[in-house]
Amino acid sequence: MWRPISPAGSMTEETIKMRKHGVQVFAVLAGAMLICTAAVAGGDAGAGKEKSVVCASCHGVSGESVMPDYPVLAGQHQDYLEHSLKAYRSGERSNPIMAAFVAALSDEDIADLAAYYAAQEGLFTLNR
Image 1 (tube, rainbow, N blue to C red):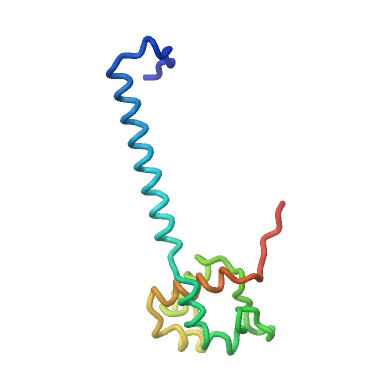
Image 2: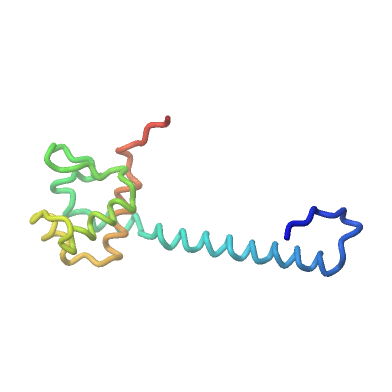
């Protein structure tokens, strides 16, 4: 049931304790959300750069392909890159060349590669 906020002088000790507890719970939940977001973002761009040597033959050193048949990876969204690489690995997306390259990649390898290419300048989103 909603009640209007009472002036500080009329709050009971129990009400003050409950509000402090509510603030503490909120702080813990907010901290947990930040930790989970960081875990989801994952990937080590430095490690991804080292692992991207093979990718460079088609997609360019920094992910900007000079050949129109190969997509630009630089600046692409990290989650999209991870999803795409995992789809090639599982066979959900079909491309014999990509399937061969990603077959031996671990989830960590994929996260690292995605972090590296997402950190590069390339694609951009227009502001509306």
